[in-house]
Length: 433
Image (cartoon, rainbow, N blue to C red; front, side, top):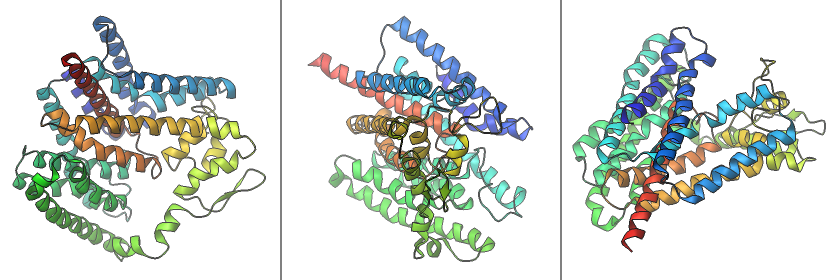
């Protein structure tokens, strides 16, 4: 199973990039991971049948079952076309099977260490590629949006590249690594976010530094280790700002702090006051907050629509294809539904569907809290993953790209690992009792 998971990881991180670089259309370049997702379904079913049990609390089975029934019901009610449904299935279900791999197979501490090291390696190889893209391949372009490494989205490269900092801090607090190694590796993971000018990283970096400290047990006993993290973390943030400013000033003039804290800039970035007119068309520019509120205005006379959505694929599918074009594709894009994951979910599975996804995050968050105590690999992952869950919740309302191949696999696989280990821990306690 370790080889299978490692293969999925490698394909998720570099497979799509290699195929697109070779001139393969993006729609086809995503197929290898989708095929692995399909194989995963068969593997999970086969192991569940052979073992006659799965390491998952009933609460997850109940929530996933409700979500599936909701999706099916909304498809039927809205009479979504088969092409759009197929498009929606690819978008919504290609990563969820990875959640169940740790549920049917128990990875040892050593196996998980190998997987984490592979993740670190696949993120580290982004650094030379980012330098190549920034200073050679796209040196003449002002925007940092093309600095993506092997990712298909610059913002997601930045966010994923700084996630290892969580594991480094957790490992340092648990005396798994030295302060020297922490200070050497952390700046490396900041480079991609600084070079592709991802503003969100400036807000997430403090959260990454503070998160493990807030949730670590016995904080008073670890003050000697917490203090160096706070000092070095402040230096790392200054380093990020410095690198960002060098690039930003080179292309635009000014710096990130002036841009971020300029009066009205953040408000204008998030909300631009867009509204839906009486004829159903959109008026004004759409900000991220607007993209979440506009569906309620667009369906103000159809509460069933904003409660349960118009069906998967019925909005997000592209109009360029007659086979998959959804009934609401034009309206969805006109109202900025593509800007954030939250707005997309409201359009397609409604407010109820969005709340179900948030509830799944809450369940994983609780399992992280229950599993964080101890000094094994599972405990360190759980402690780090608490902050990841918080970031994921924020990203629901900020970005539409958290379901990239890299983030999709990492989130669902490691979340499934935490849920499974929590179940195994509870069963062991129950057996002793």
